Length: 122
Ligand code: FES
Image (cartoon, rainbow, N blue to C red; front, side):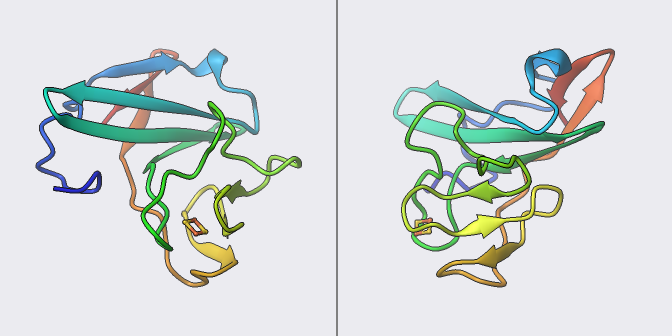
């Protein structure tokens, strides 16, 4: 089972609170890891102003996690998601790779929503 498998038992159920929206910089991201027994689910959420999206933390190039350091998912400008491994860059609101070795592929969505000022799984 890989981290993208929707049946991964470590994947948190809908309605799980991840963080307060205010914890996310206006053009920032935050990673989350959930572990159940030997299963791991890793995802991250990205904020662009009022919009928030979530993705499974697995690069479509090689399946590696995107960030080497905690929460470092964005380019310096904060307008693209970047994979630290080989530099693939993705647009934050649709996860499409617009540069690097997996151009045209996209990140796997991890549906999230903003409810009452919190970011929750949807
Ligand atoms: S694993 Fe992400 S660019 Fe290669």
